[in-house]
Length: 381
Image (cartoon, rainbow, N blue to C red; front, top):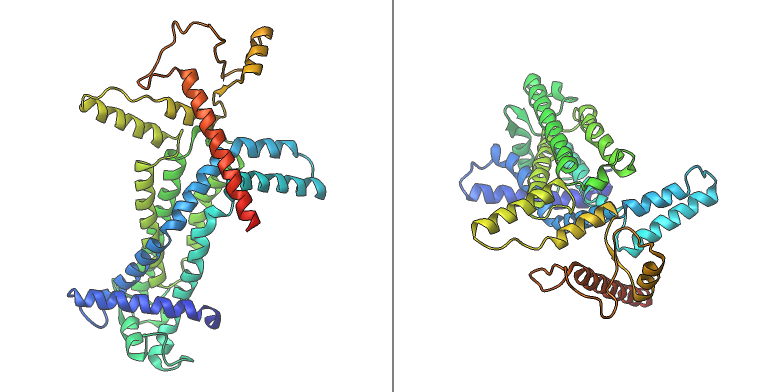
């Protein structure tokens, strides 16, 4: 395993060594001590900053998946009860075509986790190699800048008396196994609490109302993750070293901060956080003495999430709907020539609701045509 992970271990060793050098330059004690513990924290922050673009992509993919839930459920309902191979294959093809047409993928939301897993295991193997490297019994003379002397410093660095290279399963190999056990248990408990809070934060504040349907498979999966993921820490936490637990806990805290910023500044339309943000913006405008902002866009976003977006009818369909008297629900029927505008309420932009909806419809059609042209160009390339 070390042969496969060695390139990543090599990069991690240089990042930790660089963070340690920076901390000692800022006045922290050189050699064994808190600087090596904080170098793991610095490693976590460095990695998380690098994958911010992936986090943004994950957010867009997650929201696109939420918007597509009504369409996904239609496809699943269409093939419900069909267990033959042909039906299952067609269902997957229709789902993938739906994702492809909207420029997203069900796997995009997993990218940050998939990127971090090799780093996580490489750090685990690096800390595992610290003791044999410090004793001169490791198969290599060094891992990047971490030679025998530096490995000795890392091996002697502790978190409240527990060496960062120790774990619950190996605590008897160290001078104070009780300290290792207590520190590891506390770190695992903090990891469980932070992960639970992080998942709960998404489910209660940043999920659109339409996505909270108990029958929604995605919502069910999130509920399983809410209670299932912390259990993984209970069973796996005893194997990983204190340094790895520090890395994991720091990552969870970073997730909470990142999600809090996202929920506050750019919440998902139709969610509780989105309504709270709209209310804050309205109060801010009121304090400044500004008129209330036209909320047609927010109403449109909410309608899109619930699948009830108003659709303007074309001239032919509107004429037929007038003749038959069967006007679809939430449809906007344009006026006929010579029909009076009396009673129409115009907003601050000088447009009625029907005119505004028509403009939005035309804009979306133009955007879809443009995106189709881009996809065709990509395929040609």
